[in-house]
Amino acid sequence: MAGDHVVVRYLAERPQWATALRPARGRLIIGTGVVVAFMGVVAVGCVLFAVSAHSAV
Image 1 (tube, rainbow, N blue to C red):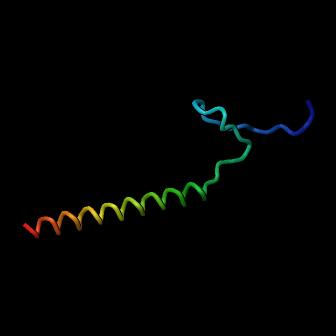
Image 2 (image 1 turned 30 degrees about the vertical axis):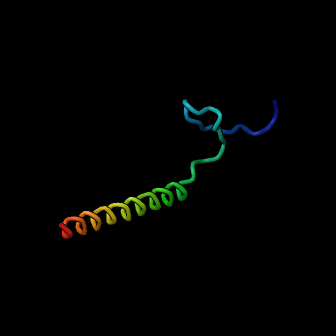
Image 3 (image 1 turned 180 degrees about the vertical axis):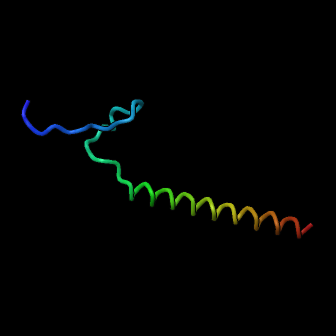
């Protein structure tokens, strides 16, 4: 077999996702930021709902 030697990365439970590419750190940070922002919006919506429902009583 000829060619370059590469490090293959994969999760033990998902060997079909094997890749020679390094994990994309920037993509991980952006994805985490999007999820945190979404959860923040949901939390603010819950608080506003609770306040409006409590003041209506």
